[in-house]
Image (cartoon, rainbow, N blue to C red; front, side):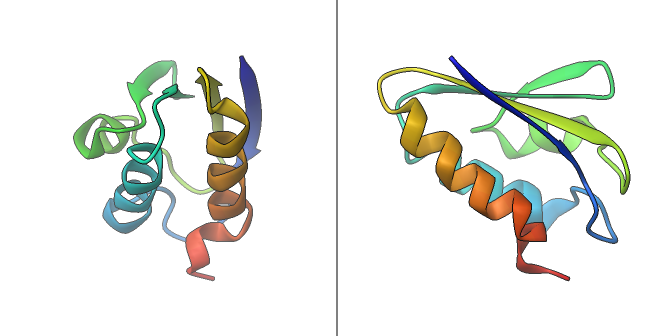
Length: 88
């Protein structure tokens, strides 16, 4: 299992577009990908579950990946998140 923690710094937090990007990238991998934030967890392949976390600017998000392609999956999500979802 691979796990990374992030503090979300883009100005709008994880709203619809970043959530859709997370789900799109996550769906390309067979690994189980879970997001944790606000004392909730969500399947990263589900846009609605990601949105239900309600992650705002300055809050922490943990990405946990487990499976055969976990290295590639966490690397792709790391690139997206560390680049502020290409918004700022």
